Image (cartoon, rainbow, N blue to C red; front, side, top):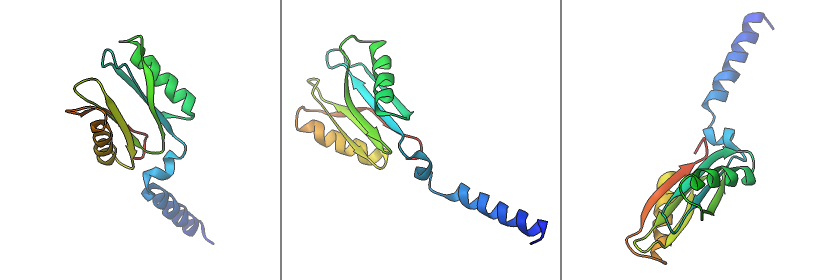
Length: 127
């Protein structure tokens, strides 16, 4: 095989790799959302290698504004949303994209509260 053929094949493989869906690159990427029901503060973290690290990141962000933060959700290789209602009740759910996660979170929230709205929605890279 000539050098030119090898270079052409290498370029083709590289181009193919760039065209793969981004989700291929996000395998086992974790995120989390923390929420303070008393203050409405929240924190989020995405693209961590472990669930624990993502939860720590979300808690650190939330604790910048509140002392009673709790992890409401964690997620892997997906999107997640947190919706909060008029009385502080909340609901959360996941999806393969932001719209799906947000719609499902609002639906979950309406089982506990009223006038639910999404306050935070995040995806790991590639989703």
